[in-house]
Image (cartoon, rainbow, N blue to C red; front, side, top):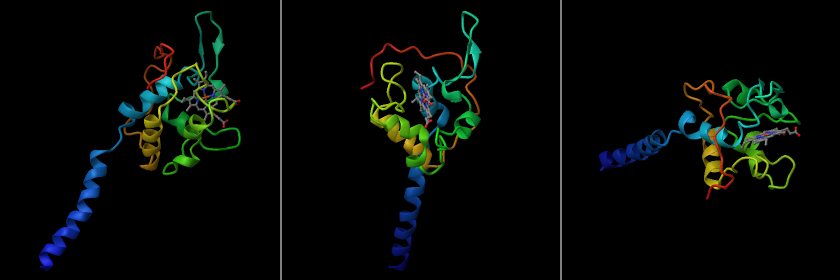
Length: 153
Ligand code: HEC
């Protein structure tokens, strides 16, 4: 009888651990594509456009590097990412503000909105510790993802 109890207890421990491992979020494959599609158009490094004019990242925020994402702070000093705390992470907050709020990003019609599932995945990535894996930067930060103007379902 003891053995059975012990086994049950062990399984109870082992299962959740195995589950989280199976669901580990891959920043490069699952999270960065969301940022690339919806944010990078405005938050890429300073560069020259086709007409030779210097284009600066909006608000001064670059979201194409790990350092840019982790070191950026909003107007009132809110860190863009607070590992473990999605509700305190400005990058997630702004996507959840009412669409007509001046601080809602991306602005309506400029880039695809994150769906509820996208926001939940982003939140889970933060909750799990905001692990970037080996990713440090987008190798092609100036390249945009084309958008047909239609919101995702
Ligand atoms: C069409 C351009 C555009 C897109 C697309 C865009 N942003 Fe921004 N973003 C801006 C501008 C402009 C500012 C500066 C606003 C200001 O300071 O008034 C800004 C500021 C921010 C801030 C700082 C807010 C604060 O509290 O000061 C965050 C966080 C942010 N953007 C996140 C994002 C995220 C996340 C995405 C994609 C989901 C995104 N942005 C997409 C233009 C954009």
